[in-house]
Every structure is written in C-alpha cells, then in structure tokens.
Image (cartoon, rainbow, N blue to C red):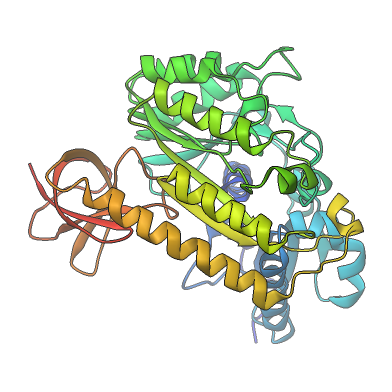
Length: 435
C-alpha cells in the first residue's frame, strides 16, 4: 500500500487512439510541466500517484480498449497503488454520463474541450504563455501539428463531430509560432493533422487556406519535410497540389480517406462525391504530382453494402493501385445517421471482406515496392531494433506505412536523413544500403 501524502504528486498521462489525441496529451503534458508538476507519458516503471487516461471513442475496438485501460487503473487504485484516476478524451466526452455510475472509482471525467477544468482539478493554471510550446512524446525529429479541431462533414458513419464538435481552425500565426518552436528544438518533419485538412481557414479566413499555411510552414528554417494527413476528397482545393509541386520540403504524400469505391455506397455514406469524380480527382493529383504516394482507407460492411457494392470497391482498389491503403470494419455508432439503418452485415462477412481487400493491397504494395529495387531514396531514421536501423521515405508516415530497414552494421544517427539504395523488398518493407 502507498503511504499517501508523503511526497509530491506525480502525474502519468496515458494516451489511446489517434495522433490528434497524442497532440492533446502533449499540450496537457506541457501545461503540467509549466506548472512545476512532475509528469510522465506512458511511463514504463511508473511511480506516479495520479493517472490521466486520454481515451478514444472512434469505433467499437477503440472504445473497448479505452474501457479496459480505465478498469486496469481503477483496479490499481483500489489496490492502493495509485491515488487518483481521471479520464478525458473522446470516450469520456461522449459517454461520461453512462460510464460514471458504472466505474465509480474514476475520480472525474472530462470532455475533449475541458482542458482548463482538468488542469484546475490537477491544481494547475492554464498558462497562455505556453501556447505554441509543446513537449513531444514522439521522437524529437518529427511532430504532429494539429491545424484544426472538429468536423463539419455529414458522413453517415462517423461520430467524430459528436465528440469533437464543429470545425475550428487554429489561427495561422499560432501554428507558425508552434512550428518555429518545434524546429528550434530539432524537429525536421511536421505531420499536419485535422479531421479534414482541406477545410482549414473556412471559419476564420472565409476561404480554404491550406495552401497559404503550407507556404508559411515551408519557409521555416530547419523543417525538411511537411506531410499532409486526412484530406477530404469532396471540394478538394487543388491549389494544394501547386504548392506541393513547388516546394521541395512538402512531401509527395497525401492521406485521403475515400471509404468506398461504389457510387451508391458513397451516397449512402453521405460523402458528397461519387466514384467517377473520385477517380478523376486521383488522376488529377497524380498528373500534377507524378511522384506522389496516396494513402487511403476503406470501410467494409456499412449498412446496405451488398456483394455487388463490395465487388465495386474491390475493382476500384484494383484499378487505382493506391500506394498505401488500410480498411476498417464498419462500427455501428449510436446517434450517427447510419445508426438509423440496420447493422445488417454479419461480423464474419465484414472480416472476410476486410481480409480480401488487404490481400489485394498486399499484392499491389509488393509490386510497387519491387519496382523500387535499385533506386536511391532520402530516408529519415526513427529507431533501431532487431539488428536494423529503421526509417521512412517521404512516402511514409510513422507507424502506419512502409519502412526502410538498414542493417545495423551500417551506422546512421537516429533523427537524421541518409540516402539509401534499395536492394530487396517485401510487401510492406524495403531493405537497402547506405549510399
């Protein structure tokens, strides 16, 4: 049993879910440190007496992981190993009224926009002078830059607006300040994130303003890569492609979740675009930026998806040959538009369709990777493990995309770039030698 009150409080922040949650945790981390409070992030040898769990509520599996994590820490509290458990993030924002009576050992629940209240509970003041400052939980050479919060899109399956609210762009000067501070501390890669990057600026500048933001970020000394994640296809601002082509430090990479390849399913999903327009957009992007890698995601088993619709998605993926692709099983989220429809696709069929698409993508990726043998790429090295230095090309985001492996007898410094000639490949990995 811990003896309470014999030492200062120490906070451990546990982050679940996406990179947007990670940024929120980093801001909390920075504020607590700025208040002189001892704080760690996902400490392995944890001697903290307070735990803050930043939850995800996106789909069923994520919600279950969040609940399991909460239960694990409340059990630790009951055993006297910690004193306080606080829960924040998407799951807490959406379900705190239902969860609080079920898990009474949680000391307090906070929504996604309640950072000041959470800080006050932790006996910290929100320090405005720390806006633009951020302590990273990622390796220092790359950082996520969240340029907007929330979403105005009406997608039938998505509960994000219920948890994150309407789209709110971050002022450009604050983003540039934050990026400059990160660069001064050694960050070389900025990964721009939002629920929808392409909406940036509509609320505060009355126009889609992502291209201007990109230009300003591109001018910052020390930033060698800028990567775009989560661009919505409907209404895509094509001036982004011009700035991408013009600036060498904007990666030829675009994450654009398309969700399906059937026009009928895209209509049911309320995506605001059909297959024909989607294909035309992808072709335009590839024509304007010939060396681009497009990452997308699909959903299998949305209500109403027939075998014919799935076959259309398969043929779409087969035809477009996306450089990177992931697929989710549909999750029936209450209060979404799709929740009004019966969740009529059995889980085993969802799984089967997911597996079929990933088998197809594995073959596509293997062929694309094989075509890279003999080519030399600029690689940013992230970590060392299992006898290899492991890095990424401009075509790859951390954790979700392909990796370049370099045998450890060829020394590189982590966080540095190096030129690597590819000697052989696998479905999702490339192996090479230093040039």
